[in-house]
Image (cartoon, rainbow, N blue to C red; front, side):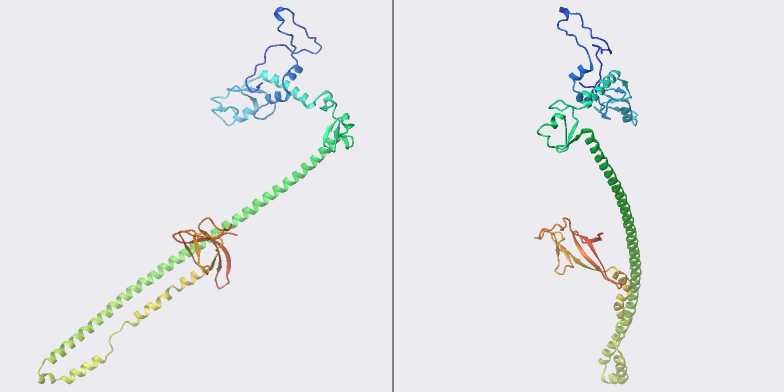
Length: 415
């Protein structure tokens, strides 16, 4: 029997009123195959199991008995309040919660016949809860009221069960007393669980607060790192421009001095060439002409030859040795970030090969035969310990170093 579908109460035998005697229908050949039937709640209760009847009389949304049942476009029934809540945010295409059939507009039809059946289902449910005469459940074996509770077996029993061999030696108490005792225990546990829930809620709030505090501190550190790296970039760029400018000026100075020195050398070469040509012509003269004024010529040549030849400009020669002094400020700045690394072979990826001093690493196209280790990275990474070297003392930390074929790059990992 499906009460969720459109339900129509049949017109048939009516219920008997209080004090009314049933009246049999006239007997006859035409009625021999139709026995007299009196429709009572007891007859319906005997024909339909109470639990099944209760399930069919329940709303699929709130899972309770229908309250003010209504039918919708597809024929399914719901409580008016339940289906109204389901559709309160919909303006079109109203969907049935059970079959998902949609309708363009809201259509709620009261189901009065189903409402009457619900009243019968409620009474049947109440009778099933009472379980028998006098509102008490009966012992399945002896059909006696279950008035006692066996503390040994933790089960309700009747007076006959109390005298049986199975329960004779067991401690028993009245069922109401046992129920009250268990209720007190349940309530005590409820309070314990409530207290525990309060503590857990407090722990949750405290954990959220700590996490928020940690996140704020991490964000502050992130901003500091970004600011320091930005400052370092700006410093390096300024030093680059400064050093490149100095090198450009030095380049121009070298070219200027080179041109001056070459001009002097060319002038001296020309002078020496004139002297050579003069002496060669002198050697071709006759003896009388050759000896004339020869002493003065030789004295002049000896003085000129005694002079030192031109050498490279001392300023130009000293310039290359002074170049390293130009970037001493940059070196001092970069020294602040100098660290001593120690690579960890137990965490290195199988394609990373470490040097014996564990200071260098190289990439291999083939995997190396390394022992299995749960700490070993599956990606091209490894751990390393860094000791920062500075005048104020060294600081140590553990870093995760990620590598790739182009080259390594590292970043700090929080511990």
